[in-house]
Image (cartoon, rainbow, N blue to C red):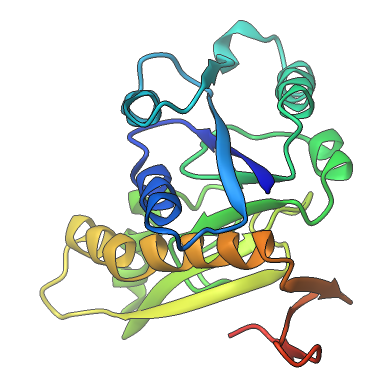
Length: 217
């Protein structure tokens, strides 16, 4: 059974999707053992407590710089004996020391089809505002491993979502969460916990039941 540590900064809707997947049996070989928040008082912490999941608050504002904050988060992750770390609406930058300590063991979900609308500054409503401004017909979500490059890690899963003519950024954001993020993040975590993911040459492959491999889709 793999230990899953989830990093949060806000309401925790993606955390809830993971909790639901765990309780329904979709995530069979992993357990959320700790939720770490970069802010006190956020609703994600309440979600965790409602399901008897231990929580820790490591407030970004209490640390002088990114390096000091990253060290504190890394120490907590190691204390929790994490096998997998999941960014679930975690809005704080961590430096390379964390990634180097957990290679291909940290996941993030991004609300667009990478490489579109991603990278530094692309988070929250801005992603969907830009998608609408560009007039794309399809957007979606991506789950990827975390590397030193923002939104640049190997892609695990993607799911498209149609863009409608009357969409606002808020409406599109909600649809992307409901139709994509809340589905592929638990799926990717379950695959990791089942030892079905392999990274080769910066690409993610899924081991088949017949012991072969196929590229994730």
